[in-house]
Amino acid sequence: MRDANFFMHPNANWQRRYEALRASFVERLSDAVVADRFGYKPGYIRLLKHQFRTGKFDFHEPPPDQQGKVARRRVSQEIRNKIRSWREKRLSAGEITQLLSQENIEISVRTVERVLAEEGFEKLPRRTQLKIGITVAGATVPDKSQIARLNTINGQRFESEAAGIFLFAPFIAQLGLNEVVHEA
Image (cartoon, rainbow, N blue to C red):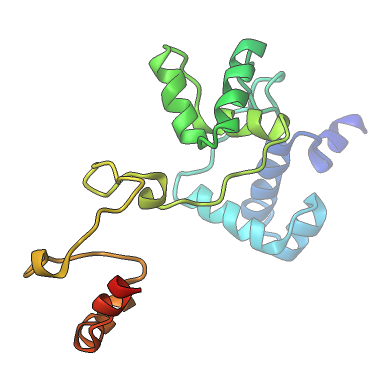
């Protein structure tokens, strides 16, 4: 019986989920039996039933050519070359997306990441805004620090990754190390 097979052993994922729900609600079969019949786990059957009860289950069949496929944006060789050259300058996928957007090329960050992976680039390690050279307020951080003299910093606050050195500033002043270094 070809007709019974169509319903008992569905091929399409959407139909398998539908038949599993029908068997669960209409035939009142247990989650374990339904899961075994349609190749799911009992927890997934409970999830399907929850989605159905809350109105989050979609019964519409997907278009035949889109079933199981993810639409991907095609990227021209010219754009690939731009992405590659910007990554060689250590720019992140987000920064590359912004640069492309400035040239009226709208590509998502995920597409840029995919192109970079296809071109053999690994993801950059996470960088803080300070390491990129931008503070939280958006100001540029200078590459070279400025000299601060003890007599000019009264009452000022400083932030540093190596702030522990400031704990020793009073001790350094008492020892007169600045004069020893000057004489050396």
